[in-house]
Amino acid sequence: MERCYRLQKNRAFQYVYRKGHSVACRDLVMLVAPGRELKVGFSVSKKVGKAVTRNKVKRRLRECFRPFTGDVKTGLYVIVARPTAAEAAFDALQKDMRYLLKKHGALKHPEAQEGNRAR
Image (tube, rainbow, N blue to C red; front, side, top):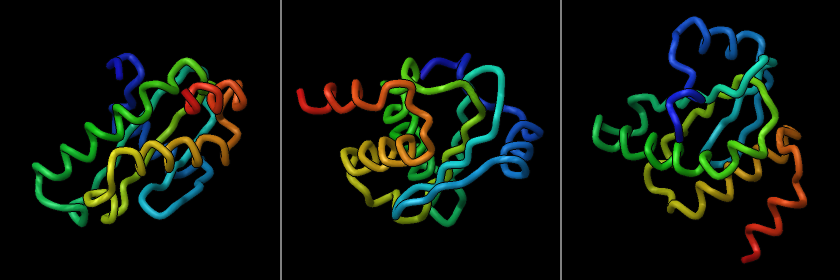
């Protein structure tokens, strides 16, 4: 995922935690707050594991979100990894990401994304 889409400042994360609406599944929690442009941040706490594990989970989550960047509505997104995300397979994380985006109604064309998955 490109750096221009990343949420980096602590102030921005705090805004999303305060104003955002959350949806959760087994491995991930997604918070969405209104915004003028698309920005995505990833939060992986020390409960997930040591630094190597946390960085691996963050890399996987970035890669899971990357195919959706063109199909996601603008706003500020924070994806929080639960401790079970460390053991989850990449395919499971992708399915969870798609599920959370659909549940939020964040996809511009949800039926188009289903067509890509079937291929």
